[in-house]
Amino acid sequence: MTNVTVFIMAAFTSPENIGTDPKSMLWLLPITTAVAVVYKATKLQTITWKNFIKEVTTLIGSIAVFLIITALVLYVFAWFTTE
Image (cartoon, rainbow, N blue to C red; front, top):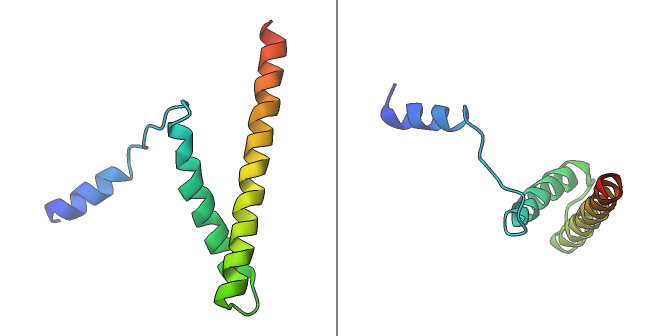
């Protein structure tokens, strides 16, 4: 195997360390975007640019709002249980 192949295979054996500070939470945006694009690409019957962008944007917003609400609920729950 070539060095490039070995390097690529090694990259999948150790996970990326993503912290929990607000700056690291920005990694959720590209992951959310990728999930929304792939999901809508497989679920829409006919894909037009205007409709696809609208559907993907709506799904990204829905996922982001759900993640924020879930984080706030968990934060409040943790605050109540530790105080």
